[in-house]
Length: 391
Image (cartoon, rainbow, N blue to C red; front, side, top):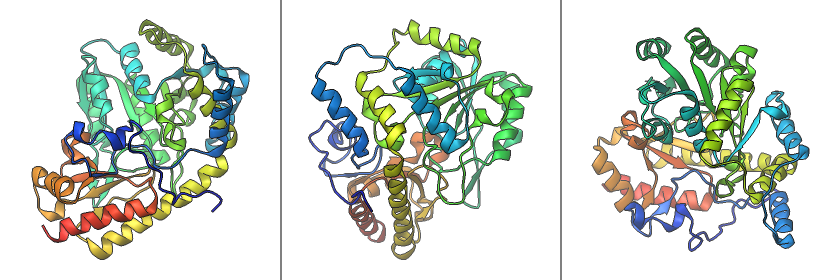
């Protein structure tokens, strides 16, 4: 490979949420962290170069984007997802979670119902409940180790609770599904039928594995486009979460104006200069790095699967269609949630995301971030093996 993804970079002592806050989260200081969804790889060299130029200039005043930024975003989504967007659709935000919160506030009122599909990325619940909206859950069905959508329940919940907004996770975090076109269309038709808006979190869309294809929900029909707030960011793809740059695409001008007004009412209007520069550089020059990164991460997944099959067959990895987050099933160990956490954290000294963080449907599961150098993943698995086989 042209890029060295085996290189281990010391992150402790950098105020890294992943590495420097174990004790604040109630974990042992020496726990090996494979939890929060950022990567242990330096970002793409063209991005570093662009940021270095900005630092050397040395002035960090108020910054906005020009047409070349818009063109970079448009080219990325057209080339990779065959989605033609218009520049005026783009609303810049500091992150996808902030965008989801703005969508909840802009398109619902207190007491209105918002639908999610658990187990799912936990801020979905928090942006609904902390804004005093009614959280409605359409739980995914686990069928022979594979998660499916319960469409009958999906529509029934929408009707029974008069749902106004559906937050879609595509690809799905944490279960790793990449929704098929027919699945997206079936949800889309139900939402159209009952006048439900869709906030689609597509932040993991660049990580889709062999045999699968990410389809932008809004691209599937003009009707879906007009009801959708598509939330995207380069942060997962290029390890830029700390620079806080996201692009929200809203085609309908009335929805876009309501979203902007809500954002302005919160006092937010510009991205930071570093985030803008990094996003543009990523979409202009980051493709080669990304393709090698994906090859490396897929190798990590195969390594993890083979290791578990050989050394810990009681622990089953979920099918990984998208994302770099593996949903591990520990239920065959027969441990309760408290004992499972004790084994993983205090005996194995590894730090994953406990499954119940994503909703009670995650009991017995753990989410593992495999976007790390393979020696790090190997060490985590060795620690886990010792704890599992000597419990």
